Amino acid sequence: MSADGLPRTAAPGDPAPPPGPVVVGRYDQSPGYGVNRPRGADSWLFTWTTGGQGRLSQGATRTRAGVGDLVVLAPGVRHDYGVAPGAPHWRFWWAHCRARPSWRAWLRPYATGDGLHVITSTPADAHDRIEAAFRRMLSDARWTGTGAPPATEDDREQVAVAHGTAARELALCALEEVVLLTAGAARAPTPRPGVDPRIRHAQELIAADPAAPHTVRSLAADVALPPSRFAHLFSQQFGRSPMRELREARLRHAAQLLEGTDLPVGRVAAASGFASPCHFNRVFHERYGLPPGAYRSNGPTISEYGIDAGQSPKVQG
Image (cartoon, rainbow, N blue to C red; front, side, top):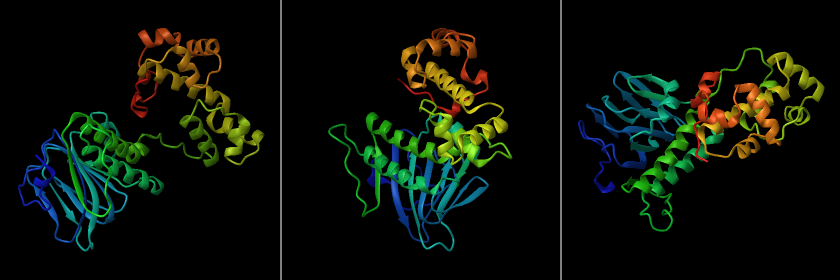
């Protein structure tokens, strides 16, 4: 199969691309454009709208897609989509592929029924990066494995099919970035009601980078509060001091590294913000009941300590 064989407008019953290759494209369609597949598709379909408006349905579930919306259609359910009624056009990126299993947990909070997932809460300041990821996906899909992937062109619609294993995996990595950037907000814990947004932001800073050299003074400066006032509010609203929160975040980070990578224990300690390996071994043992090395070999999973392992996908060190 080649990109030249893909229809620009599918007639009712036209087949979707097969699930093996990754097929990615960028369209800017006029009113009247539509695709109707009564049997659905064997692959997942991802659409990211950059202009105009689209309409999409999956089974009995329908939605409209505006700028910045990611709409995902699961395989095996009849679907159709096209330019929304009254819209002047629909400019969008699309990709057919076999979704990686880990993506389903990220998409699940946005399920609206019948295999349709609608994500409309993506921050505007992430749109450029998402657009860049789709451009890279298009480029990587066309890679032959020799030299660098070709550059994309901005002045025309394009479609690419990733046939080779390397090109396919690179393209999926770019699409995974899109999934994480758009659906990542669903993984964030629900904010506690009544918490001062400045204190919540400080907690988010700790959680995002526990290995950073945070101090009460630096965190207070980040949220524009005097250090003593910041420490009092933090302890009052979370029931623990900022430095206790930091230690817990570092220990969680270390546990995730021990479970998900082969990094030596000393490097895990340093990557988690602990300056002393001996201190790290002691506080880790106190927190988890096992020293780091034994935890890696025999310890329980992160989720058994009340942490959703899906919140931080494992990395290979």
